Amino acid sequence: MLSIALSLALSGQALAQEPVAAPLNPVFSPYTLGVPTELTSFEVDTSVEDGTAVADDDDDDAPASSVKSEKEAVKSGKATAQPAPGPKRVKKIIKTVPPKTFMKLHRYEAGISVGFVANDPFLNRYIIGGVFDYHATEIFAIEAQIGYAPVLGQGGCDDPDWKPLSCQLLTKNSVSPDISRLTAHGAIGLQFAPIYGKVAAGDSIIAFDIYGTVGLGITQTEDDLVALQADDEAPDGDAHRSASEVHPTTVMGGGARIAFSETVAVRAEVKSMTYIETVKATTLEMKNNLIVQANVSFFFPGMK
Image (cartoon, rainbow, N blue to C red; front, side):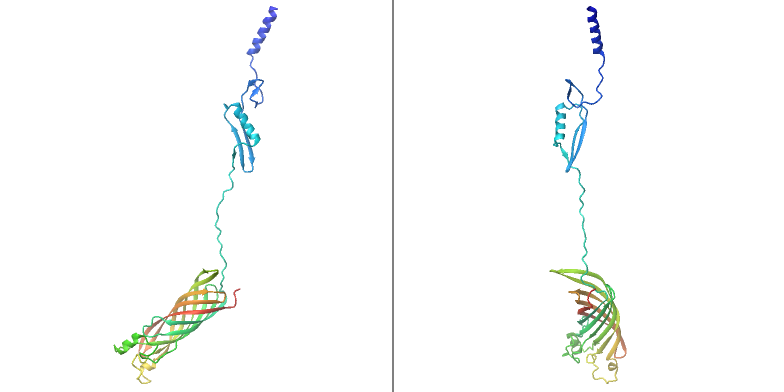
């Protein structure tokens, strides 16, 4: 009996000293057979419609109750949701260019004009005329203009054409001003309209352009023999021989055109007419007439 007891005691001591192998699989339960086991970390990634639910536990020392509560939160879908970044919203400015409401391409423009000579200190000259253009492109046009300035008097202080300065020089200062009336003119030139724009007027859109002109023409003038104090001179005298002349003329100018519809437009323009005239058949003198005028124009055919 004593030997049996000693054998059991020795075998129990050997079993107590033999190490116990660790389990092959990690255990997630907080207790196994009443013995606490080490918990492994885990990560659950659950995608939802408006974000991503994530539960992490990297702390090996976290209590079992905390781990269990996190697992239950993940299973129930109540874990903290981190919204996934959405697409970046970028503001874009979309520029729209409305079509031109007024076109000149391959169209004709005809109109009437009224104006006056703005830089003549001695005479009032009022001009009526006409204009005719062919617009080869939206920018370039070939232009023809004519004008007529009627003679309203025969000279003297009562002449509607005379300005006060002319009467003062002749009657008070005994000075004979060189007065020549512009009576008619005509020119052919090139029109260049590089600037185009629109203006909103209530519910309507008004188109306009700014243009320049250059050309060649002729100007007819008539000397005032009363101002030259040559009205009593013989018909074959120097003043009479050069009283009425036609001069080659250079024309330069510019203006603005405002289109109120596809067919009707108005223009305001200024043009400089330069020529050389002969005074009393012996003296050459360069003259420049600055004409300010307004036109009403009609376009045809219709826009394409």
